[in-house]
Image (cartoon, rainbow, N blue to C red; front, side, top):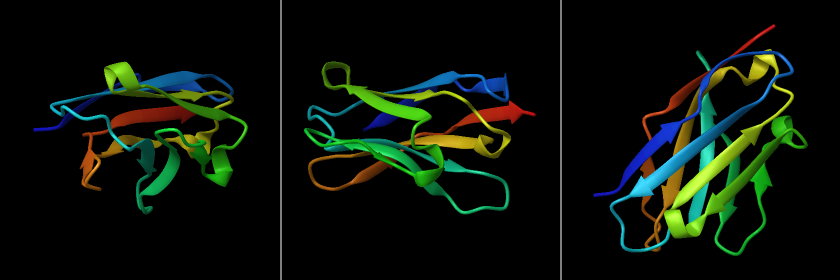
Length: 116
């Protein structure tokens, strides 16, 4: 059974940085797509960034130039480096991975709070 363990969230002042990590286990295969979503109170879940194997990163317009997604395929781990954080980045950040059969798995989420 696939399990995703997220870490790296927390409280940071506006303009600061955080680095999120998500380690996936329970699969003999690499994940085709690994990425991050976020959900703020009262808002819909939205894609923040994703990275397919051998592909280019995709970013939400709101985070382009500030966030960087990367992955370590050997460790089935995906990272999200978040710089120049803004109060509007406050949300629960959820890791999402897709296996070779297009099945999606979600982490439990990690809270990111940016104080202004």
